[in-house]
Length: 128
Image 1 (cartoon, helix red, strand yellow):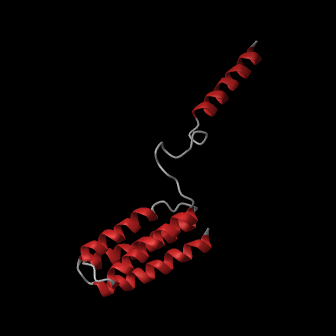
Image 2 (image 1 turned 30 degrees about the vertical axis):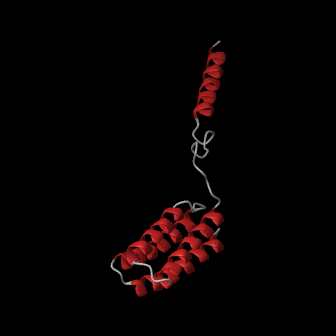
Image 3 (image 1 turned 90 degrees about the vertical axis):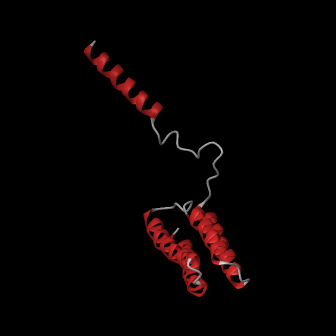
């Protein structure tokens, strides 16, 4: 009887852990789109290129800063492993510098930063 109680208690604990496990329920939130890391990298690079094109077309610094902010937002979807996350963080710092330059209407410096950021994000593909 004591053995049966221990076995049933163990089974009950195991079943409750399996039923409430967050990894078993891991999925994207309802209404949220989850992107593959390579797809998120490509989307980020596309936004960076849009910001570069805006600079070439003579857009104001605030408009360019908004495009860079969009690239920063999309880059948050890049999630593969720790090594990729560290490299993404460094690339995001470059984008933040470019955004600050764009806000202060120093578009030439922003363009150089954007070129560096584009290269850094393209290099992430090799880490996946």
